[in-house]
Image 1 (cartoon, rainbow, N blue to C red):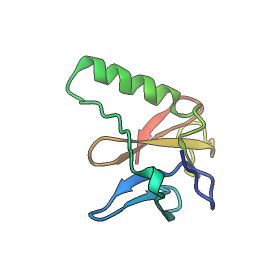
Image 2 (spheres, rainbow, N blue to C red; image 1 turned 90 degrees about the horizontal axis):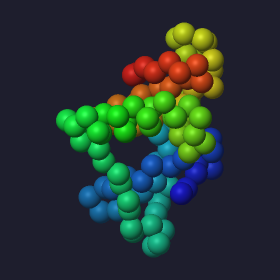
Image 3 (cartoon, rainbow, N blue to C red; image 1 turned 180 degrees about the vertical axis):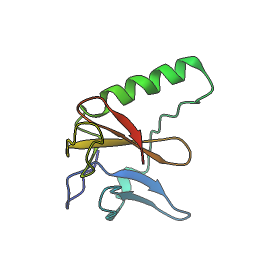
Image 4 (cartoon, rainbow, N blue to C red; image 1 turned 45 degrees about the vertical axis):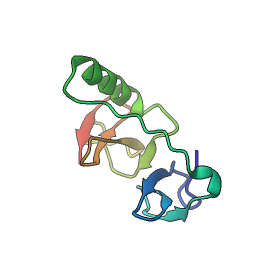
Length: 107
């Protein structure tokens, strides 16, 4: 797992047409991959089954408390907590924010 040198958020692995890069979705900094970064594991859930919806619901409930999720400076609309985190969900790469109070919202 790689982390951004600028903001210490977890880097996401992105594939371009000719390379694998690591990108920080918080500050948009990109880093080149290393030769050992060629194997990528990506877990995908189809949103059309009850089991996958329950799994995604569990992920969202734990997002605010997991250290490997991306920190944001966006305030919660319910408790005004500034230390919120987000996770990326879906093919359209929607950022779903979660606050410590449990409030979940989409940007």
